[in-house]
Image 1 (cartoon, helix red, strand yellow):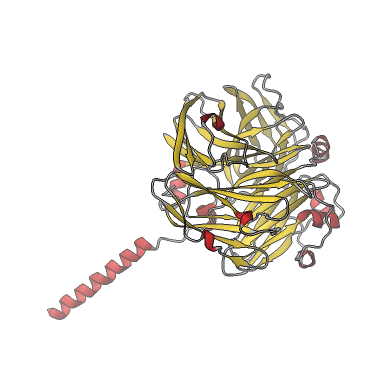
Image 2 (cartoon, rainbow, N blue to C red):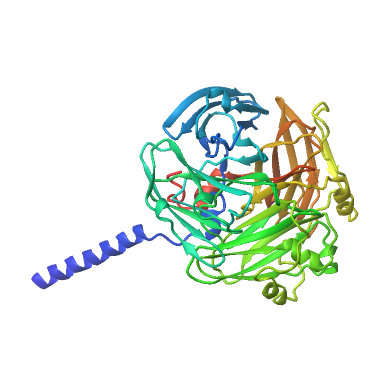
Length: 555
């Protein structure tokens, strides 16, 4: 009897241990599902009753001269009430309430709430179907970005520069009542370090903290930054500026990537005369990341005609590698300007973090990167870039008329001559800076919360598609739908469309397809280049099925 009782107890303990183990170690989540829709924001369909958006980098003394938050309500019938609260270095600051009518985009100038050494903004939305973005005016130029609905315990920025004329700053926002504790790790192509000044740094609850990295690590052309939270969750945004004295000029605003992934799409990007384009890949892991960089031009015929075959990069553990795509294209004799989407894919399954950088002006490049010889020498013989790689062609430079025209639907046919026509009618930037962390996954619906154009600038929507289904654009402004436009998709799967927005206006765009797509917007003008990420819209039921509850539960 005693032996039976002991056996029963042992069996019960083993069963309990198995049960506990099952609770503590859920099935692994594929990297795409873990990371794809946390990068910048996530909208649910049908909309949630309320949501909170975070825009960390606001007014910083001597850095930003104006900070504007843009709230776009794509709801058809219900207004959105927005509670806008400043978070400063000393805690929560002034607040205001704004009502946003259906199909309306409201701009809130936050400088009217007061002047602070540093501040970010938190926007709580109640009702409607709204998304939030923001824009900064700096001495080096304007920068705009979508805000985020997610806080996380790790944020990585693949690129950054502290070379002469550059300033690299981050704002860490802690929107929660409890203090957060962070560590900052830096990577360059040849070394890694963790400065003592950023070890166990405290960000008090409901406040922001400014990190001026160029004061700690100077004269680095490429530096990758990872901010790890050891207590709490935060949101981190970067402002990179160049003063234009001896090189590039401009400003770029970008959220970090909360983790690493095995594939990223960069739909928007134009190589300009006198500018460069770099793909920067950081490897936060402990195994070499073998990465393929695949170029997708507008005209699918250019892939074979120009010899645009994949580049192979090996990124050592704890390091960052930068490849000048402009130098590679110059070596192939490609004429500029040249529109090209980029796909970055892990060949050996090791996750990475990547960014695309575009800078103007720079000296005409030569293929003399530290790794350029290896990269060119290891080009594969496969033309294309895998399933879904390719191009959408739009024959007219303007899909959308000025806001004075009434709503309607325009069908845009496929035309192989459109790539050259669109390229010739767009301005060629001479000054500007654009950075993008790309998209970690594709989905069927996106919202671009806001896009502002000035005189002489064009607003472009770039798409990478998994199939051939048409893509529909719905543009809102002034309380109504301005215009819907339908764009055909070729079997190659890439699109670039000029919205034709009136100068001085800000619009918001919803982009939808029955196929999965990745979306970015680009503003191109003589004195500005900027890339703005769209926000993924996910079906609430499907999201609950695909992703475990613990992913993003603290967001």
